[in-house]
Image 1 (spheres, one colour):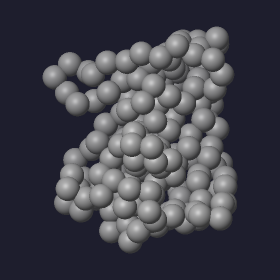
Image 2 (tube, rainbow, N blue to C red):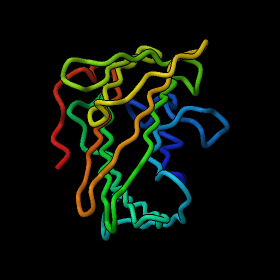
Image 3 (cartoon, rainbow, N blue to C red):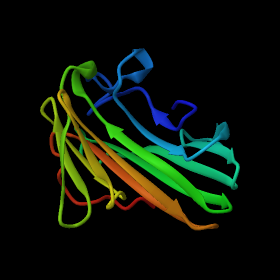
Image 4 (cartoon, one colour):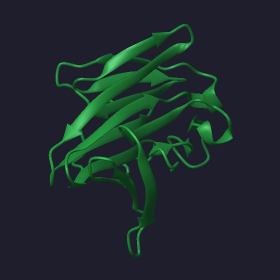
Length: 176
């Protein structure tokens, strides 16, 4: 996790696979959930877990994002859960999804689904995102990127669920 709330390194669908997010090593592929405007970043792992809780103090309040790799629905599918929490005041975050399999070699193609989710592909991997129904696709010569703005009312939360793998077109996992 980077300070801007971006997943900058992830091999998928399994640990020995090529990276699908590789911004850590100079690529541009990542999955970011970042507060809008100026902020100061921090965070910590929840006790006895691998759950990261990013925290930003903004000009308007405090935003947290609880991030976890969930137990996969299948052995060949990575499941990323991201819960945005409006700890103090309203939380406004920008979401950017640009997976590029094979260490950025394969472009991302994505389209909206009737259920409000997004489904795409990169390098033979399926990608499915729930929780960004108002997102827009930014098309470029070498692939697409998905962008969304999300507003979470004070005291509330909003879930983003991402599946990456050859069979990631299944039903939405329960983020709880």
